[in-house]
Length: 369
Image (cartoon, rainbow, N blue to C red; front, side, top):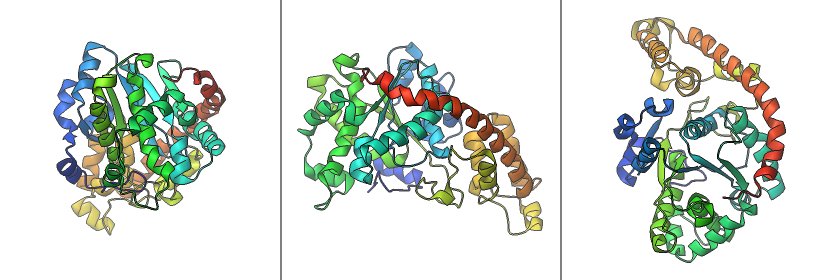
């Protein structure tokens, strides 16, 4: 069973086999200018993404929905979602970002005012600093303040029973009712852009990590059940690989030693990356003879996901490591300078974005669709 609140899935092939997720590679040639994460195989799977490809080609309406859980600091792994949103904005999408304050309250015990503060200071500030355009088809809202979403969730709940929720999420007799209800709020987040008051049915895609697939499966099932009433188009989804934490496991906001946070000073980010696990051999002699293993290297992964935009340059780095012509110390020094430069630029942009972030919920409050 996949648990959206605690799973750390690493067997992506098994996920494709057992849960019916399709390989994204099969659609790559249909996109005129695929995102870097798509080209590099970081976005590895999809459900029904052909609808989105068609909408992009035809320049017709489509929506992207991705929630933020305001429960802790935003780390560099979260940047993958923002990168995708920026690409979708450029391709004409309507962007919906629900702040999951109801879920953070029921599943993590975070009070609503604290959730709002975290959303503004951490998430919205970073989303804007990373390049998301607040004035271009962007809708950000608190779940608890969006009556369209909460009303829809209540209506959808009529066609979902406890046996189904137990089977999907593993809920039991001790699970609080708020936690059980939270996934239905997420379903409403994903489907409400298709309501008539929000422009009517349209293809919708949800970019997620694989641990969030239970929400996608539930949403797709419910969309089909209510098709005759609301004419929902079954939503699509894409799945990206997790970025590896600095110590070798999953990067997590709740485990600071594993993460580079987007609010870290540049020197701290550089120091953290230089201390990260590598794919080097036990000795310099062995590495020169056999080469390194970039697939097992957190530093190389940071270059792959975030720091090297050129595919040609990335291949050079990969082969130099594999051939043993570059040692881990040299690679760490290079990557450290890259991440320092990135964080210096981000720090400047965060300072500007923080002022806008404080007002954006007020500006968007009346635009709940």
